[in-house]
Image 1 (tube, one colour):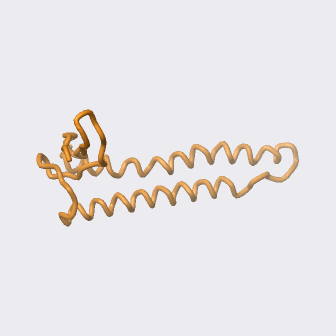
Image 2 (tube, rainbow, N blue to C red):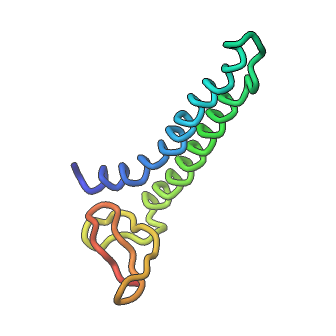
Image 3 (cartoon, helix red, strand yellow):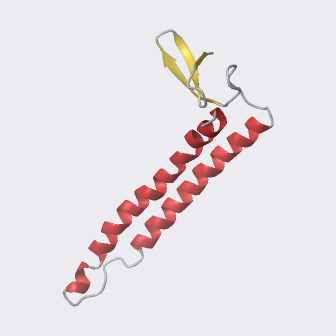
Length: 112
């Protein structure tokens, strides 16, 4: 796995988390919504699972779009890059010896 593909995986894989969380919440919501149907009633919240999944898809799409803009800025050379592998740098962190940023490709620390 190259540094660039590792960087892309670290950028884009978290965009799946909101969708998975929405699906994990929507399945029990569907089951709970259908409980009144088992005793002869109407579903309590028939649209709730669809709304939850739509929110998850929207949050995932928004996160993915933000990360793609970061990749576009990196391709154009308009962002800070690693001096070792020329990949994107992550967010600013505060450590023992001051502020630093971690490379998303090679995992090296870069002081600010």
